[in-house]
Image 1: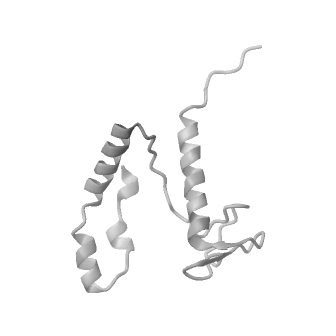
Image 2 (image 1 turned 180 degrees about the horizontal axis):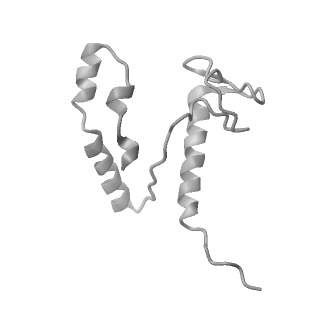
Length: 112
């Protein structure tokens, strides 16, 4: 589960918040989520969230300037205006759907 590594190095917070953050066990949290999803029969996939907040969910244009501020996303490729977190959510959801469906697609060549 390589996806879960590096959060402690990426997050920039004040010292009291860092102390609380570093005491969390992200691996344990992920294990709990996997266990609960398995128990409930819910499909679960891990996806790389990299650049999700900088990528346009409509045209897939990636630019660090697309994310104007904390809550505003304006695509420099197609001009779409969206809430930044909602845009990132759509990107992550699309990636998850792709990963999930990749396991379902048949690799057998079609017969005539």
